[in-house]
Length: 111
Image: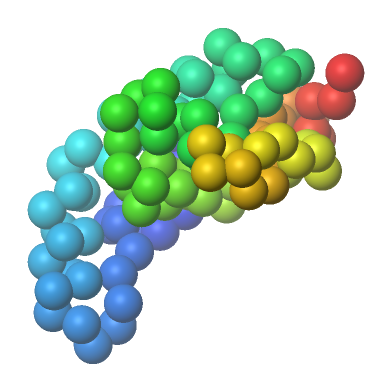
């Protein structure tokens, strides 16, 4: 899968703890992205929120949302424009897989 950050998880510039944290998760980011994408694919037209990813894959919010963000940046996942309540009752974006359009992922799957 295409890595939008050039092979290294993002971190806050100038923060040694942020950079250390990024380095510590780097070996697992690809497999975590694949798990998130697999869940989004499995959800089909229903889509998923970040909160649902966290619960289903037993991931912390920061981990789940970072991997989903990478999938958005690489064009694999899109915002559906729809919202659904989270466990806390707050409105959350529903994410869906994008479809391949010629040379890459470009269009949102809307059913």
